[in-house]
Image (cartoon, rainbow, N blue to C red; front, top):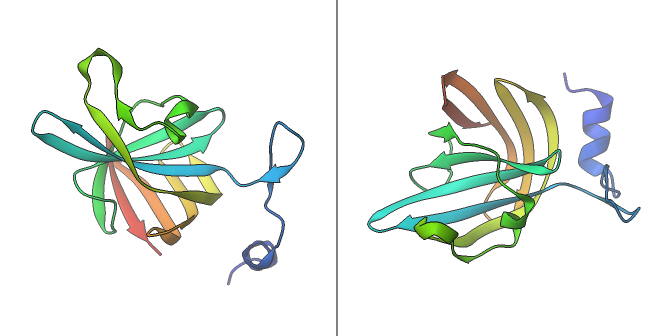
Length: 137
């Protein structure tokens, strides 16, 4: 059975995360298509604690899928498109939106994504090392 707080958060008109300007907003996420030479992958980036938690997918994130946990990226990537410095390729934003963070642990992340294509409850679970599983609920 889901908690009363869960039910309330699904209907709540006011998001739960404060902005630095004193207003309220939910954290943002973005999916970037990253192309370098003939290689292509997609990075799902979740705003958390002043950085972007980053997960790399071979294709656009669609559960069930496997992904790799990358290093945290700067918040500037929420709005960035174009050539990455030092010859690291080119990125294009293919999805963006807001999300509710429902659980954050070293080996698991649960989010409710509110984007154009990615909508609903998703789990990222560490399987081994940097390998993770992406699943919908």
